[in-house]
Structure formats: C-alpha cells, structure tokens
Length: 352
Image 1 (tube, rainbow, N blue to C red):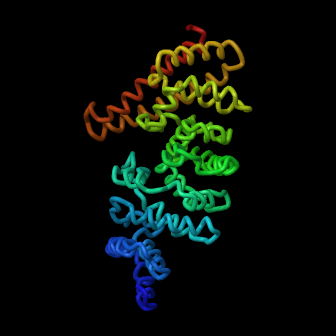
Image 2 (image 1 turned 90 degrees about the horizontal axis):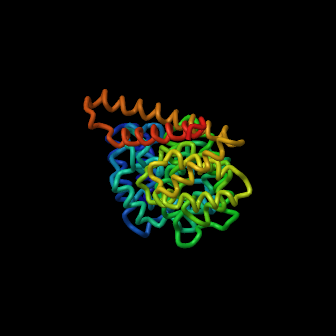
Image 3 (image 1 turned 90 degrees about the vertical axis):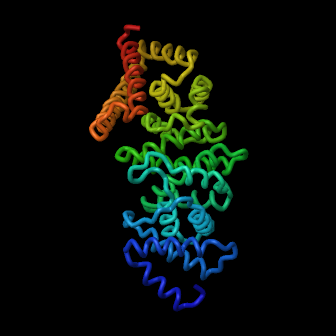
C-alpha cells in the first residue's frame, strides 16, 4: 500500500460498483485499519477501500458490517481533521452511512453489536465533538448532516449524559440551533428524522446542562413523541420526573418548552404515575376554560394522526403475517393512545 502503483490500482478497482468489489474492499479496509501506527499512505488506502465498500448511492451493495469498530476508528480520525479545518466530508459521510443505525431497510432498532461498539467508543473526546459540530453547520450539504444526525442519535447517551459537559454553554446553544434547523425542516417528510429528533430531545431534557441550552423551536420535535423507544433510559427518567420537568419548563423565558413537553405527557399518559396523571388532567381542565383550548385541540389532532398511523401499521402486520400475535407492541401502543385521546377529548369538551 505504500507504493504509488498499488494506490493507483486500488483507486481504479474501487470505482467498480460490483458486489464482489464491495465485499473485498471492506475486508481490505479492516486489514488496513488494524494497526495503530497508520501512515498517510495507509489512510489514503483506507479512504479508497471505504469508498469501494460503501459507494455513495449504491447502498444495495453494502457489505455486512457487524461490529463497526474499524469504521468508528476511521470516522474518529477524519472528524478530528475536519474540526481542524480540513475537508474530509466525503469520508465522514461514507463512514456514518456505513454504521448500521436501524434506519435503513427493515431494521427498527440498531443491531446489538453496533450499540455495544458505540458504547465502548469514546465519542465525547474534544476532537470528535469539534468535528461533529463542524459538520452539522447549516452550510454543509444535507446528506452529511443527515448521516451525522443518525450518529448523534446512536451516541446520544454519551454526549448528553456525560459526567462533564462536552461543550461550552455558547457551543451548546449554537449546536442546538444547527440541529434544530436541520431536524425541523426534515422531520415534516421523514419518519426516520422524526424518531432521531425526539430521541435526541429526550436525552437533552434528561441533562440539567443541555436542557438549559435547547433551542426553543427544537421542543416542537415532541410532536413526534410516539416515535421514540419508551424503553430508553432517558425516556423513562423524563416520564418518572414529569412534574419536575414541567416546573423547569415554566421557568423558561418562552412558552415553547412548556407547550410541547405538556403535549408529550399526553402521548405517554399511560407511563405516568398517579400523581403526574392527576396534574396533567388538572392542567387540561384549567386550559379548557381559558386560552389553552387551541393547544388542547392541537394535542388531540396530533394524537389522532398517530392513532390512524399505528392502526395502519397494525393492519399491515395482520395482512403480512396473518396472525393476531404479530405487532403486539404496536397494538399495546395503539390501545394506550386511544385511551389518552378519549380522556383528553372528554376534558376538552367539558365533560370531566
């Protein structure tokens, strides 16, 4: 790999969009990335092999990744260079697209190997963080920001639950603004972005530091609250501390946080304890008698849309598998949402 002729040959062969080339390129990539003392020539060869394995716009040829430790090492190096002002956006986008994230094909969650590998990887190092911040800047192309948003979702527990803040306060605010600009514009049309956005938002809300710097318009991602995995630790913590977080939202200088967090509590009403349920209902009764009726109707409309969507998914399971046992988790979520919808509708109509 340290001879010009070898690199020229690799540059030519990795342009071929053929399954055999893709698989062989990935095996070569892992071999190149194995040592710790990589030279500039090794990194150039690794970039060529990565391109051959994960050619942009040829996802159907992607090799089976398994544990993405070599890809994370490759990504870490190039994010560090990006943060220092070099342009390695293509390599970063290739690497992030290659990490199994649960947002492609038939996957609904990241594979266990990916989750464990990301947990072990030090994603909160300053050089890594600088690189991610640089890539999420609005001036960068959509594709790479989308790929990085997926990566942030995977590593969100490290970033937003770190023992020490990984950014300065002004950097947090700027990062949240950049993230909000991308997620909100994209979420209207993309279910994957909706899930990513609300997952990240729950992680931010759990953090005493991050919740103070969350961009006001980012709170609106709670409109997609049912997309989140309710088994996530951050989601369970936020719902267990629902009233404490309502008090925090009341102290913000704008009303967006309170509006959307309160709406999210209706989406997850069945997961609240008795005290929180009583408080949520009391607030709804007060709102129904004053200026809050329009917000209550907004929540009802959003819940209604989710009920329709989930019913369609349940019907799809039934048609595909021909059994009532399929889609148990979805049906449970549907029953809970219908209960919330009915309860909120009664309060809004003044019957409770």
